[in-house]
Image 1: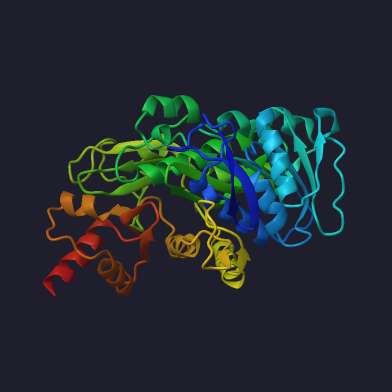
Image 2: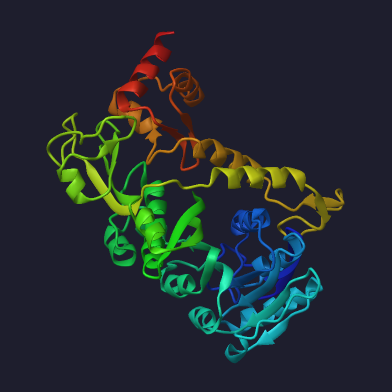
Length: 441
């Protein structure tokens, strides 16, 4: 298979281009669909108030992430970047791509990991290694940023990553085994993530929250509280960025924000609770209600007489640091500059001398997340499911419902988990009242 040259961000790259769909059978894996994933990583690290960060891309593949971080991060932000892959073919391609971008590097073995070179001026030192990802981490002295982005299940790398993550460090975790997390394979989710998923309208949010909790439980063993600062579900994957806080009390507080949810498909109500004991004692909180109490005295029955479905253990807290998203949008707006290059497919764009370094949908996606982050709830309302459950025809316009909920004093926004979803702190009855009043006008 031949190599072809493309551009992504500020980087020029040689990659293996498949004739059909991208698959793990490529000699060295590169997925153009994950460009937005990499854009977000560059933006998050650019917004951090840190200097001389020690960065590890433990499954670097073609080296695209490491090259982009070296070229695009603000001067002095990265002190060291380690691009590692267990495949000798991948390492050769990483070296070729670093040379293509005029980036100096050193190829090292496992016995050289403890001796980290210093950055030259404001440019990061770059190391390339051909090691098992866990071996790389365990042989090192630790990192300020670790990126786990495997093809499939990330679980086998998390323990080593957490053990080598520095105080206030950032851990990024991607999972592409969404069939387990989103409930298609419930037994697999229980085996891999120690949690029961939920099939239905909320499956992607529930899956993301299960992934977050799974990482947090492993961090707890090292007295590290891993609080999500940016997380999302898109295309075929789920991804979360965690900030590491050290201390037993911080871990205890973090774990108090994990628990379970119940969902009633008959009325679309969502409730959350911290433990099965609290559910039995009637101390759950139904979304949109300021009073506590389960939907019905029966654990499995809702007030509407529907049968509730349960999921967890999972993360019940915030999915985003709102100020971080604001900073990312501000930085994105300030650096919407262009670079010479070609389009994503690699063909020369002769009519234009430059193309934006960011994914075209990135700003719109961040603005959607910013609005969603202003509504702190677990779960959302799928309007198709809601209207079907309550025999509402025709379906109201989502923007109209959101506007009227805000006028009624509730928080409401679209959700990135579904194009037909509304995240709101209003309860089922309040949603019904708003829709009814909308139809009468």
